[in-house]
Image 1 (cartoon, rainbow, N blue to C red):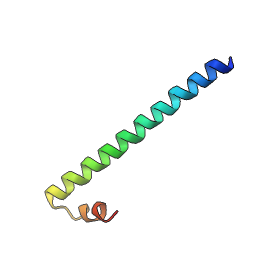
Image 2 (cartoon, rainbow, N blue to C red):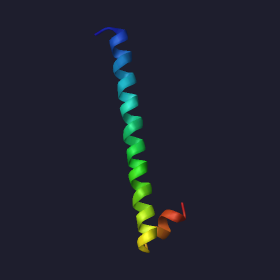
Image 3 (cartoon, helix red, strand yellow):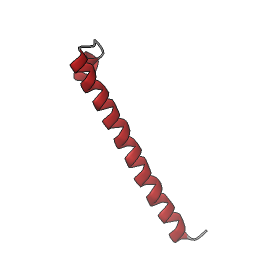
Length: 49
């Protein structure tokens, strides 16, 4: 396994991680938003952050 191949793999891995983190954040944000709209009590926990 060459160094170039390894760095390329690392780059892809980091990019995938960024996408996963973004998706988690977006999903959580959407969940909180709909919680606030629905008037659920867990929405207050999201708003206080």
